[in-house]
Image 1 (tube, rainbow, N blue to C red):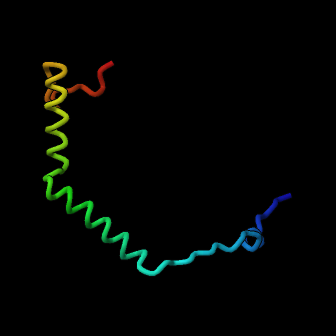
Image 2: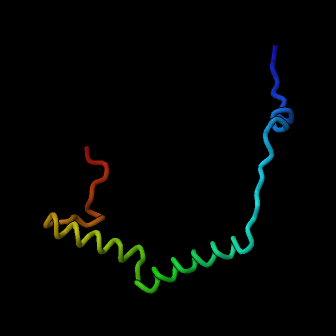
Length: 76
């Protein structure tokens, strides 16, 4: 005996989702994202500067840091 799933019956059993959009809500989110990106740009924070900072800290703490190409990621 094969059982089938009545998808429509399952969907109809779900409660309706209520979404109330507040005026200006989307615009606030866009402005916040733009502000965050602008602050990073003003501080000149990017992936390269983060890498250099982490590398400098590791070098200071450890005294030696291998180059990325020299690291053996599959070493057992």
